[in-house]
Image (tube, rainbow over all chains, first blue to last red):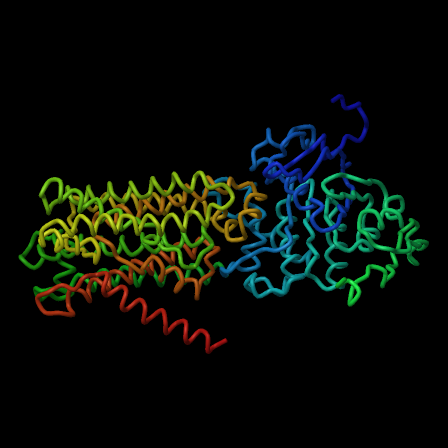
Length: 278
Length: 331
């Protein structure tokens, strides 16, 4: 595939990507590109393949066919180690039963940048402290990671990816267990980092207000891409998510000088409750 | 934080050295600290008691220290890479493999003493390790589960073979096999001490080099992979290193249970395992513990030695249970 010489080559490009498990297609022929500096939201109902797609992008699963190209190179031609220097990932939930401190977890961001036996220098420590301060957790420095709240844990993982100093940050539903306050806080934090971000969202309104562009997948296929204004429509909500809703302009649209769609859901039409027993 | 760590390590190091020194003065033949001092200075040349201390007690105490540190480190590493607080070097069938090796050797050759027995035990352990690596290497995503389950299954398999062979062999073999199931440092000699020392120091050194990767493993396979770690290969490497440590120790001093499980947990109560201090402290505390267990095994009964494994399990369990109890009440 010829890529025309443009001024702004994509940072990440997905070409004809398909992935299946035991002959069941999970992702089918997905194509898109992400330009540097963009904040991209990935939307789709449960089981649509959001996490599977992101796994292919952060080099955890290898696609059955198609390619993922990062800065002009197929990611499977890079080593895991090289790729981790450039792409950081924040996952939904982090299991940990052992007493790593917040500092220990954040300093893991150094892992891809450090060789065996190399020590953590004063300069590295400075970077770690700065990252922790940036996410507002300085007062928890020596606390164990387990004792942090859900929102604090996710912020700590963002601090870890700041230390990792990536070009691309991938987040798989990082806010799914959080209160709305922390959902907003976390996404605004990610936006303030000035790196390219690709995040999957559960909350469509939050995605609409945060993202420069949205990708919508349904049953493993990419069904819509573009600006939130273009993607979030009543038809799309009905077709992809199976809900009846009205889309209007968010009251802050004028102030922020861009159109932010706002979704208002309608209720009582799905035949739930007593009638559904029939 | 850094200063505290240095302080803790220096205190532990001081305790380790003084424990070894004090331990040397205990034994069947009466001796004083000044004898120990003279013996170390003169390398056992001056007197009878000095020879006992230098030729018998010194290698024995050093082996005890090495065994304690080695097993504790192996346990810590296995708990880390499997993220399972119950993981322990013996859970993976290494000591059953050793017993099997020894019993096979005795049944085939009739020999029941000497260095060749240790070699047989080592071969048995390595066989278990290779089988485990072979199975876990094929497992893919479910690697942790298959590693743990295969370890337990192998352990039972080799125990069954061992019992079967013992059933048909003479009672003398049963006495000899008891050594491998209960553990003892009585076979320690200067001439063979270099082997466990070399294996434990080099494996522990490598593990310290990998400390970032080890920490990353605690956050889950997927997180670790996104930090650029080839998770499955790394886990196998750590399994091989800890098995080597365990195999060498089982061959030298038999199966000493519970240390590998318990010491990492005790240290974890006080020091974060995420730091290099955590690793060093685990090794030191394991060593100190084992030196004192060896002292107990020599002095508890007059003119008789208690098996090491009995003491580690008894003391270890009681200490561990009380620690769990009091920690719970504090919080």
